[in-house]
Image (cartoon, rainbow, N blue to C red; front, top):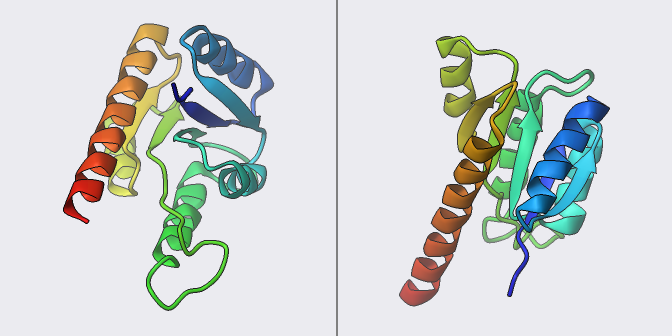
Length: 147
């Protein structure tokens, strides 16, 4: 059975440790990056099933990370013959201390699959991850059926 792989991108060590603890207890394989730059490289190298992404990070915000991720995915169109030719972006859950409605809407409009506020509730986070992974699996099966 496939052990789902979650990439956590957060500049705060304590947050990375908390995610790792919660997710490993639920049977997920977890990788962590302390910056957006490292997170993008890990995403390319490891191809995780889902990304938990902090919104407010120095050097590269979560919004910038997501913008670059979408650029990588667009590069997979026919005619591109490079390492990204088969790249499909995994679902991304923004995690942020910004709790105002317009912040959540901005995150979803930017392309995040979901938005969770800090401090997070472990059961809520796990349920959102399960839902997104189920949706991705259904989408993959449907795509294979059509082709």
